[in-house]
Amino acid sequence: GNVTVAADSKENLVTVAAGIGAAAGTAGIGAAADVHVINTDTEATISDMAEVGSYDTATGTVTNRAGAVEVTAEDTSDTKVNAASAGLSFGAGVGAGAASATDVINKNILANIGKGSQIYAKNIAVKATENDGILTTANGVAGAVTVALEGSVSVSNVKHTITADVGNDATINA
Image 1: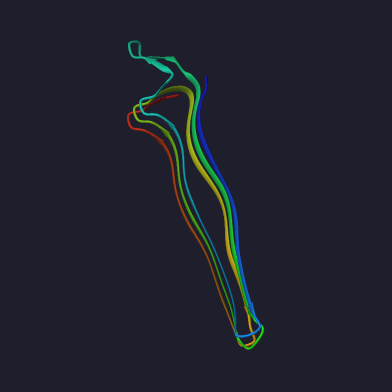
Image 2 (image 1 turned 120 degrees about the vertical axis):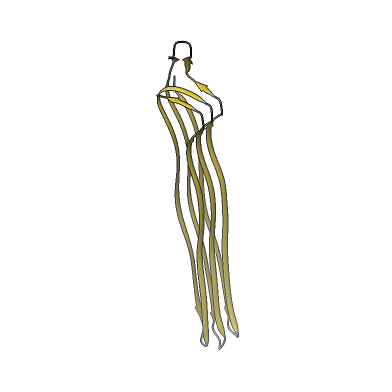
């Protein structure tokens, strides 16, 4: 028969932050900030010293071979982060706006056949994959008769560790 060890993680995140400030006098100030943090661990593992299929040490032959052994770990995410602000002054004052959008994404994806394992199969696959769709935006507007100031910043900090591994002293026979 076949042996499948699979781990699949999916994140779908949409966030929006908005701010508006308006004044008929001295100052209209608007600000918005949007921050999100994703930390994930996705792991598919055949444990240390596991046996799939069998081998006769006396005759030196494989006596039972699995059809296919597949170890897969996959992480997929779609994130959309938006911050928007407006600062408006309709008198003789100041209009100011500020917007900030920040992503912090840390992912560990591991597909592993453990150390010392003995795997006898017709086909063997160990796969770790990661797919990200990231859109981070910061938008702002400021308007005034006298002074208008606006600043926007968008930051994405992404760290991924993706590993497909066969442990030390493992026997892989396909």
